[in-house]
Image (cartoon, rainbow, N blue to C red; front, side, top):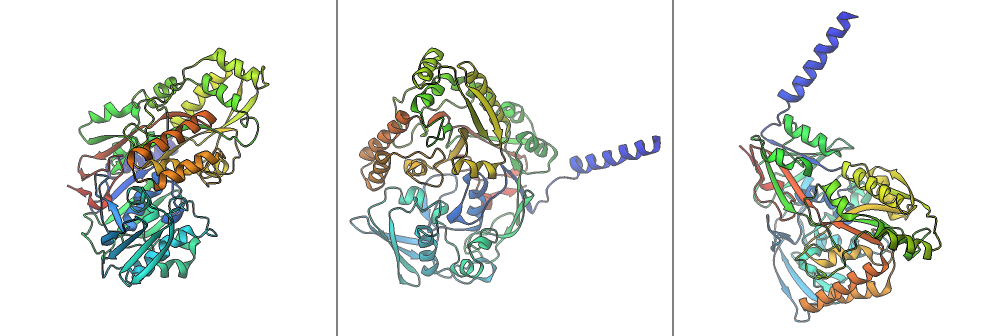
Amino acid sequence: MKRIMMLLIVVMFVAFAGFSSFAEVPKDELKIAQWEDINTLDPGWMTSTERELTIMNCIYNGLVKYKEGTWEVVPDLAESWDISKDGKEITFYLRKGVQFQKGYGEMTAEDVKFSFERIIDPEAKSPEEETWAALDNVEILNKYTVKLVLKYPSARLFTSSLPLNAGMIVSKKAVEEMGKEKFAFYPIGTGPYEFVAWIPKGKVELQTFENYWGEKPKIKKLTFVPIVEVSTVEMALKTGEIDIGRVSLKNVKRYQEDPNINVYLNPGLKYWWIGFTVNKPPFDNLKLREAVRYAIDVDKIIQAAFFGIPRRATQMFPPGMLGYWEDAPVYKVDLNRAKELLKEAGYPDGFKATFLMWPTEENRIIAEVVKADLEKIGIDIDIDVKEVGAFNEATKKGENDFHISFFATTLDPGYATQWFVTDQAWNLSQWSNPEYDKLLKDAESEMDPQKRAQLYVKAQKLIDKDCWAIWLTNGVETVATQKNINIGEIFPNGRLAPWIISKD
């Protein structure tokens, strides 16, 4: 027995030594920890900006892009473009000689037409269909010239539709050859990196695309590792097992003082909320939703789950975004009012409900605060924890009473608000308000910024009135790297541009 114990100790020592001393990532590889695993690498069917967009940005190009480190829109696959006087026709002049990965040939106008029209095909049921709601069709003028024909001028065409995933160009030949299901996990683009492998729950591997038309990346191999728990990411950073990851808000100061780690903080461009499923009992009752809003202590959630670092949100838009509602109401805890609303709703003795979340430390804390707060007014909460994929399916189908969620957004308010129109796939609350739908449609074609802002304020007021969301925060993004990482330019919301990152 003593000998066995000694052998076990030796094995454990060797394993730990290998993890801590020999885990340093090779100089020609960049290992990035990301929150959770991918669901797809097809840009027309992206399920999460957090899990998938950075990888897609490495594989694909769009006609335009955000300049690294900024929200400035610059040419990418299109060298230039013309816009008609009425704003409904945009003609793009494409770069010549751009090659697709894996030998799929030259990118041409046919690929552009195919990439956009597959999204607006109603039978395809792309979650990005609303992003391209203004698009009528794409005309091929010649091999290197395409014209986008819009139903109406699109105010967010160049701020969110084109520079993000819905504007990325895929290989028509590859999609038709493989089919959409296979293409989702064997992507073909024109970007600086090409896909190598995906090991579910393990990693996504990319390598430099040797025939890339632009400046070659500085690091040959990218490995994206899904790590859900931030404490595990922190340990991997500490041991050198990964190059880049996130650190918890609780530990930001400690890592800022670590001589081996660089920490970058960026204002959040997300919106966290507690959402109600409004098309079925119990929360089809507006008074019940309002009662919960008066019972939940949002300030306590910000302090407990986010360590008081980000500011509290009163709407989905962060300050400074077009359409920000300056005097949006701040709902303070009022248990007496909450109990009155319960009584008016016909639930004087409270009721039972299920609160859905995916497993993270901050979600656990949020759920505990929600449960404790609602117990004070007689509502008994059962906390239901599902993995992210199952969580997404349940919320999209309305298979919950209420839930925690967050969406990442862009600087354009049309991107943030589009997910909540009637019957949109990501309308997690199953909410429907025809007036809201019309406001968003009007705002999409309104080219006067002040008038457009007023439309989004009105839309926010409808959300507040119907009370399907309790807004929490827009968050803070943390990026931590090993000291030898030259991170280049980080986008204003903390998103990486791996193709410009280098190592000392």
